[in-house]
Each structure stands twice: as structure tokens, then as C-alpha cells.
Length: 392
Image (cartoon, rainbow, N blue to C red; front, top):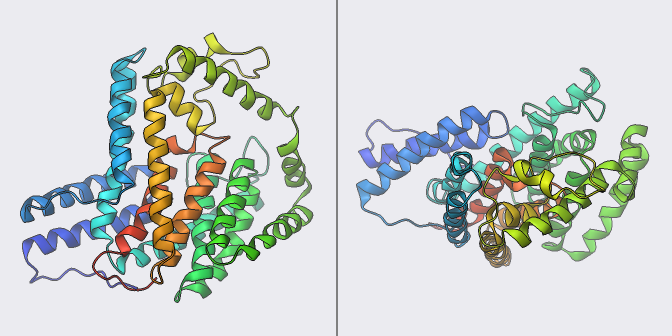
């Protein structure tokens, strides 16, 4: 673990870096607990980062995955300019500030600090999992209308963050030299809490993400996934077993509605191919494209990440996002082949795969808490590889 300390005799720019590091630790701890606290700390860390770079006259450095997101942000702003309601769309663009997490993590969490950051993520995730279990068992968060949500605002956000933490925990179990006992200790709570959310997309995301993490160690480990899934289904309460069965039910109302949203999305993209309808405009225009099989009269988004980006921001923005995914995957694969930091790289690959799988039925990339955790986990392996960081 990296010791984080402030020294009274440090030079001003070192004190700035220490303040930025502490703010980043706060961000990593708070993003699974409070979006308000996270945003405040993000502002503090960003100011420290800017002051540090101005003091040293340094140019911006970031991992390769950052630059496609810069293009994605620019195309999002262009989409807002051509939006059906530019005022609303530009207001929605404030989420783009979250992309600053990548250079912040890359600078402040370099070397052995990256492993410490992941330890914070796992520990807070474990605490959050316990909250969800208590909500289910004691506070009657035990039905589809009222599911465990931890300290977050919605069960979809909660299940998404648990999904990412589980991928990171498995990566630490398989690859890390230190912290494996703690990872093994918290894993049951994480899995049980995710199961109790009854969020099918996150269940699928975990299966895919953990499968990718297994592949970074030994492909034969993937045989464990169906065993774990069957065991979980057999031991789960009846309501959760019934929920799992609906994954394959074409007549399930939510499944039907997601197919209808995809059909509407295709029609929207045909009419607005370059810049989309604008950020936060799907709900406004959806009734005009709603197909007869749709269940809901309108939807705030299309429950599919690629389709949502294409319809909302245009095909160019989708291309930039796919560039980001490819850049992140290739960079993490290169790091995973090295002897150092394999647990961090495997965690990033698992998180990316889980996001993509779950993102086929949920617009998780548009969820602020989820996106922040994902960006941090994707950047940590690159940050660890700077300055001869300690093994992870």
C-alpha cells in the first residue's frame, strides 16, 4: 500500500500534488456513496491538477484512451449545437467534465498509488454491498418496484457499480501478490448483493466481465462460470429464480420494450445520422418513433449504449466512442501481458467487457457514478505503469 502523507516542509508544487492526491482518494471513496461529494472533490482535484501543471509548465499527458473521448466530447458539443433544444442539450453536456478523471488519475495515482486506489474501491464496494443486503433482508427492498440500491439513487446504478467492483475483485484474486485474502473475504457479499438487485443486465455483465478476467489467467477457468450461475440460481429465493428465467422470455414486457426501443432508435438514426437529435432529447422525440409493440409511451433513453449514442449524438460520436473502446481494450491487453500490474489491467479489461455486455440493455455509460468508476478503473493500469510503480 502507498502511504499518503502531507509534509509541512514540502515545496509548494509538491503540496499541490499532495492535495490533489488526497482529493482523488476522496473521489474514489465517495463515487459509490455520494455524487454531490464526488463532484465537489472532482472540482478540488481538477484545480490542483491545473495549478500543478501551470507551476511546472508541463504539457497534458494521458493514456491513449483519453484522446478518442476528447473527440467524443467535441462531437457531443456539436450535437448539442444542432439539437432540437440546444439549451437543454448544452446543460446536459456538463457530464463531459467527468472525463477529466482520466488525466487526474493518470497524474496523481501513478506508480504504486494505483493499487491503493483500487483497494479503496474494493473496500467501499464491500461496505456498499452490506448496505444492500441489509436493505433486502431488513428494510424489505425485496421486489421489482423496490430493490436494494445501497447509498446510491437507483438500483440500476448500484448494480452497475457492484458489477465493476466484482470484476476488480476477481482480478485481484487471480493476479495480485498482495490483498488476495481481503478480496476473497468480500467476494460473497458482493455477489449476494448483486443477485438481490434483480438487475439482469448487470448479471450478464458480471458473467462476461469475469469471463474476460479468467481469460487473462487461464481460459479453462471460464468453465467455472456456468457452475457458479447454476449454483446461484438453485440457492436463490424463488423471486430471483423467476427473474433470471425472464432473461430468455421474449414475451417479458421489459424485453419487448427494449426491442421496440432499438427499432425506434434505428428510425431516429436514419433521420438524424450525423449529429443525432441532441443530448437529452430522446424522451422528447421518442413518441414520434414509437413502434406498435412498445410498452411505454416514452423513454428517457433507449436502454442500449451504442444505439443511444448514435440516436442522441450521431454516428460520428458513436465512431469516436467505439474508438475509445478499442483503444482502451488494446492498451489494457498490452499491459496485461506484462509481469507487473496484471491485476489492474485484468480489472480494467473485465470492467470494459462488463460495461459493453450490460450496455446492450441499459444506457450505463450515461450514468455519472458508473461512468466515473469505469474511467478510474480503466486509467489505473496506465497510471501504475508510470515512474516504475510497485507491483500490483
